[in-house]
Image (tube, rainbow, N blue to C red; front, side, top):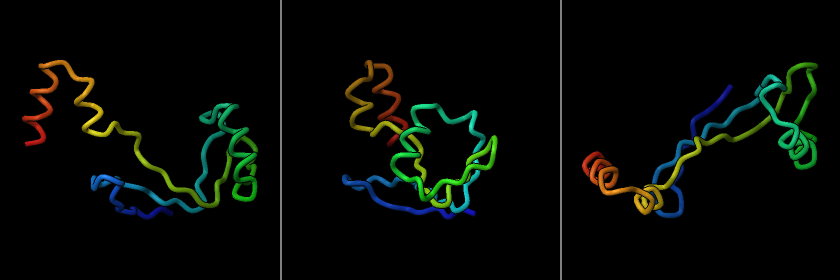
Length: 87
């Protein structure tokens, strides 16, 4: 099951965070490096299900670039589009 958690980040933007319990994922989707980190950092939250991994509790956020950082990297055409889109 999961629950959507709304939180403000440090500069007031909204970030959607999803909270999951008993999250099952195919091990093929997890890199060896990430698996090593998970096993080191949260071994008590992991359960090996053969070709799947159960994580008893986790928070997940969409990876996003903050608007101010994106705008610093835009060319003029992109900057105009993002300003018009944002309003």
